[in-house]
Structures are given as structure tokens and as C-alpha cells.
Image (cartoon, rainbow, N blue to C red; front, side, top):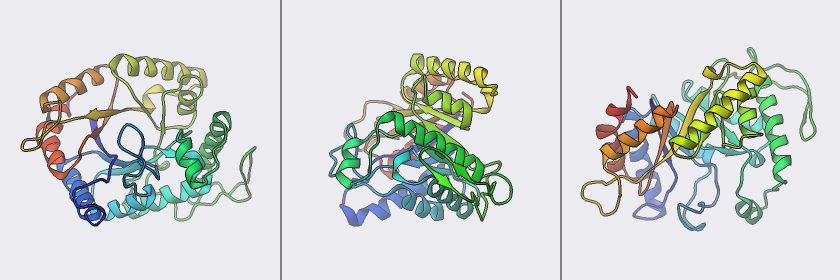
Length: 298
């Protein structure tokens, strides 16, 4: 099993001046500990379930570029990007820039988005869900075209939502045949069908029974479109509320987390992306020493 780390909060002791040094400590520690991937959210306000909207939130692509300079081996991505935040070619150029500057370590994580409050607060258009899915599919089609060959297909594109006259991408990504595309979400009729058609990875929420069901739905979509199901990496975002020595709180011992990851592996999860509460460098150190070595063979 691969193991990733999601950084979902930048609310650290010391306030805004502490964000950069604390984040550097987390990122460097995760990279050195052997995490396969490191992710940040693509949000502009903190999301419900993590904290109040007023909590600090960094813009995702800028943060990933900074993280690329601090790391050497972990892949980096957004968990996951909201399709309406950027035009399709901007998605591809941003992912390509990250891939080139990191030496081929980028993910392009994207989805249909959900945070209407955040979008309306900041003035982002927030089309109805059906339109966002149409935008997502056109964005994926453009991405495939721009990752073709040495500098993109250079063809035109005439969609319902987007039009382009020359889909060129220079420099081209180091990752081939493209920066791997991860689609987030478990919608069975649209999202997982788009995964089967366009993606290299799927990320869903839920426990073992739920994710196993989602993978069976994905398998059926792959059969329907003639796609090899085993080409698609199956990932799961996992809450990790770890008990850290010397700190209050936490409900899981490292072994309890390992046991849970074992159940997810049995359900078909290949890449567990851990999202710890109260994430600090000592949390990452504990995960690296007590959890990662035990889950490599799952």
C-alpha cells in the first residue's frame, strides 16, 4: 500500500508568522519519512469539518510549488481541485509547471467541486452541478490533448463551455504519458464513469464496505468503456486522529491505524492518504516510524 499525507489546516501555534516554518517542518519530515505523496486542499476558506471558515487557508498551487523546492521524492498534488476555479489550460499549465520543477512528481487532482459558500463569498461563478460535470469532462479532454506528444496535440477544441484554437503545452510534462490525473468523488453515475474514461486514479471517502462497493461500480464502468480497471490507482482519504505522546487528544494508537489501513487494503485501497488532526512535525515523525513500515506490504 502507498501512503500519502494530506495537510488540511494551516492553523498552527504562533499564528500567521509560524505558517511557513511549521509547514516546512511537516513537509520535509514527511518526505524524509518516506510518504509517497503530500497533498493540500484546493480551497480558499477553511472547510466545515476541519474548522471555521476564518481559519487560515493557503492557495493550493502556490503552496505546492513552494513544497516542491523543499522535497525530493514525494509526489505533490491538490486533494482535489475545484474545476470552476480555473480554466482548463490553466489547470494543465499549472500541473505541468509543478511536474517540471519537481522533477516529475506532480499529480493533477480535480473534481466537480462543492463549496458554494466559499465560491459565492469570493465571487467565483458556481454553475449548477450538471454544468460543473460538463466543465469537468471538457477539462479532462483538454488535459489529455495538451499532454499528448512533445508539446500537446496543437489541435483546436470546440466544446459547450470551452473553446481553444491551439492546445500546445511547452515545456511538456516530465511525467509520461501525462501528469497522472486523479478525480475525487464517489458519485456512481457520473464521477466514476469519468474516472473510467479519463483518469489514472480515483479518490473516494468511506470505510471498507463503502469503498469496496465504489470500486465494483468503477470496475463496471471500465468494462463498459473498454478500459483496463487495473490501470486505475484506487485511493482513499483516511482521517487519522493519532495519539501523540506528550500531547492531549487523539483517539487512535499507531497500531489501531495500521489495523484500519489493513481493512481498507483488503477492500481494494492501494493508496491511503492520511489526513491527521492537529498535524505537527511530531505527528509526521510518529506516522513515519510506527505506521509506514507496517503498511508497505498490505
